[in-house]
Image 1: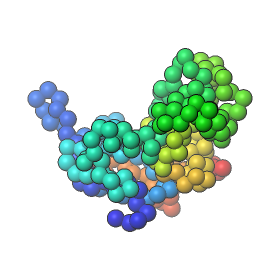
Image 2: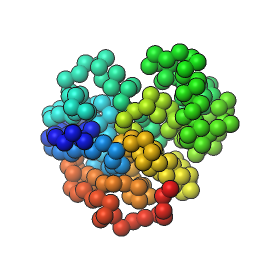
Image 3: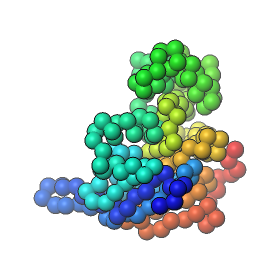
Amino acid sequence: MSSDTVISIKNVKRCYRMGGEQVWALDGVDLDIQRGEYISIMGPSGSGKSTLFNMIGGLDLPSEGEVTIDGAFLTKMNQKQLAYIRCRKIGYIFQTFNLIEVMSALENVMLPIIFSGASDEEAKSKAIGILDKVGLSGRYDHRPSQLSGGQQQRVAVARALANTPAILLADEPTGNLDLKTGEDLIRTLQKLKDDLGVTVITATHDNKMLAASDRVIYLEAGKIIDIKTKEHLSFSFGKIG
């Protein structure tokens, strides 16, 4: 494994039982992801991309095989250790935003910082800086219901960045956004990758992601059927920047 490999997936299989049948959501996946890459995982419904996404994020564990982050084996960790990894190394962005409705944008971003052990004052200062970075200065006191869909997604991005993660996982991040807002979000993710060296991994159906991706991983029936690099991606929705 290269010293620049942040995530390594070796012969990962994931079996679920549905009724009396075994269903292999992943069936022998091998993949190394380099630090600072922008990866898109694509495939039809039922291809296994959400399962692979959950394996990378430590939200689920394989039936067989190994997943490592910075050389640490997720499969050998207890729940407390997994929670630490998820809190300190990984930021999550969900399609449905998952913001707390009774909290302001600032409070939503402060929450994971406080959970990591920071004081209220430290959390507030850091959260303001992150909200400014994603273009939400002046929206600190707005609750989710007072924000547009695009602004809510930016709060979700800011919350994902709260503890300075090395890895940003985005599950269908443009699924609930209009075309322009979706493109703006993709530019934001690429800027985070370029400026902060964050490894961005998305599970997506959205072809707009191809313009920003360093590699696209295509899944079908739980197997990787193709990997395309930036040089081989022909789709583009315009310059990102």
